[in-house]
Amino acid sequence: MTIEARSLSFRYGDKPVLREVSFALTSGRFHALLGPNGAGKSTLFGLLTRLLALQQGDIFLAGQSLKKQPAEAMRQIGVVFQQNALDLDLTVRQNLQYHAALHGLSRKEARFRGDQELERFNLLDRANDAVRQLNGGHRRRVEIARALLHKPSLLLLDEPTVGLDVASRKALNAHVRTLCDEDGLTVLWATHLIEEVSNDDRVLILHQGQLLADGDGHRICETEGTRNLAETFHTLTGAG
Ligand SMILES: Nc1ncnc2c1ncn2[C@@H]1O[C@H](COP(=O)(O)OP(=O)(O)OP(=O)(O)O)[C@@H](O)[C@H]1O
Image 1 (cartoon, helix red, strand yellow):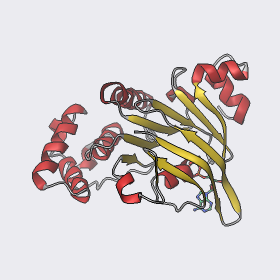
Image 2 (cartoon, rainbow, N blue to C red):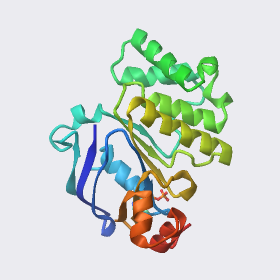
Image 3 (cartoon, rainbow, N blue to C red):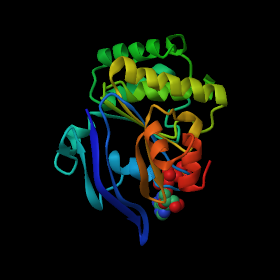
């Protein structure tokens, strides 16, 4: 399942934040949305998840406009926002079950799906622990497991490694990549950290609300005449 943005522009008041942003993600691939702080990544996520209302342009999910089929379309999407959104005082399992109920899963299904995801994320033994007892990396894993409970085909992650140490960042990034390889999940991973992006990824570089590059990492480097993505990112945005 793919998502396509067509000519998205967005402003807060009279401040333009996104300008004519267009792209189409490829089903089953890991896509890195790379942009410095303030580039407009979270705003773009807000539009893709309908937290923000479209102002200009449209978004298509599996060919259907979000304007026409919002509820149906949203069932295909799982989201992990930048801010941790788990209830720290509930257990891991309770957090998952609560979220599953919001998606209309029965109690039995919720328990089954929750435990299935926890097992896959190597967290089943922590199911009865309060989230507060988990380290940052494990909390993020629970959030991703939660986002996958309703079996979406597209996973959006907005700077999911914020606040994690280097080892946890690497592990989380690697884990999400396996979800693409093993489950055919389409992933859009927003980050300002070049080390989370690989040359083989599809890379979208956003800067000051404009998409400056979109393509396979190595191709972008060829086009820009740069040695690697870090240099490309720096040349295009001044960041990195
Ligand atoms: N609610 C808001 N009202 C006004 N301006 C906003 C609002 N939210 C974001 N902005 C501004 O819009 C621009 C893009 O912000 P956005 O959060 O989308 O970028 P980002 O790439 O996600 O950056 P970060 O990683 O720092 O969150 C920034 O200049 C930000 O200050």
